[in-house]
Image 1: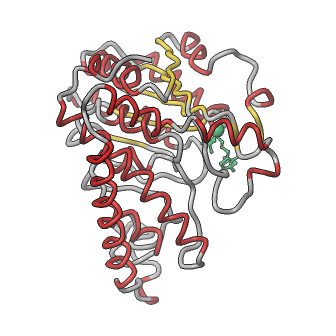
Image 2 (image 1 turned 90 degrees about the horizontal axis):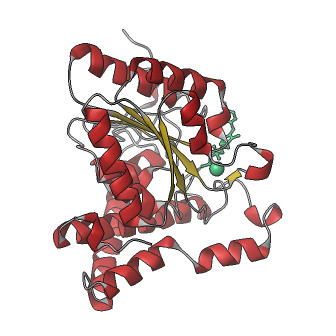
Amino acid sequence: MKTLKKSGLSKEEMIQAYYEVKRGRRLDERLWQLTRIGKTSFNISGQGAEVAQVAMAMAFEHDKDIFLPYYRDMTACLVWGMTSKDIILGSFGKDADPSSHGRQMPNHYGSKEHNIVSFASTVSTQMPLATGVAYAAQLEGKDYIALTTTGEGSANQGEVQEAMNFAGVKKLPVIFVVENNNYAISVPIEEQYANENMSDRAHGYGFEGITVDGNDFTEVYLTFKKAVKDARSGKGPKLIELKVYRLTSHSADDDQTIYRSKEDIEKMKESDPIDVFEKQLIDEGYLTQADMDKMDEEIRAEIDKATDEAEAMPDSAPESLLDEVYAK
Ligand SMILES: Cc1ncc(C[n+]2csc(CCOP(=O)(O)OP(=O)(O)O)c2C)c(N)n1
Ligand SMILES: [Mg+2]
């Protein structure tokens, strides 16, 4: 594992990275809790991928690059500019939900303000859209790039081939990411694909594919920094496979102990990437345990406040049901 120093990030940036990682975890725990007590209907969780998502998102320019995420990318969306309250408003389906005024499925984000394209539950439909966004950048002669993510199971959808093929042909400024967490709901990777690495597929489209340990903050950050530089300078797309953990069940609607061994789950939880990141931060002198405890308290308070405020907001008026669903 690479040291954090090797990332080239300043101390302030590294502390910010930790804040984002921890905020992602605590917010997800809150969303989970809200489903368990029946206050919200659904959660799908990125627990285990926060370190990779922060390292990935920090390599982009959020005020101009366009993010087309999938449902586990909440932590990356936070780095891109969304707030805890934005996310919770969506979960409660409140009128002030910036994604859709409560019309989208919970945990399906988007923010026009922050260059995040709202996604569908229909897996991988964001991939051809990202190719389209990158094609627009090329046609307009602008230097923004598109980042899009999906899961390793969803990477087998037909439209992923279409998205990558066209992006390769036109050398478009798009970065495709597969967050490989070993499972597509209950189906393990041995039953999903026969190639060794998901990233190997990139060669068939004429661009580079890279597999990275998603628990290695510096490695992920530097890989994306290079991919961003290449895409912005006209060198075309990349496919980056992030090997990550899925610490929770697929979503609030299943129980992973039914299809995953106890040992597998225990082993994964023992090597939680946040624990690894915290150890690195302490060993390399960025933060002390006391600093982290204080930050954690502040994050918990921020999320409590966001939850209370979001819950107290009004629902959308029933007569507005079809507003903003169809274009005028
Ligand atoms: C087109 C389509 N087929 C099936 C589903 C049901 N579905 C939702 S998530 C999922 C598994 C996705 O697994 P993976 O791509 O590995 O992503 P992960 O959830 O593991 O991050 C499936 C089959 C769907 N949403 N869309
Ligand atoms: Mg998966």
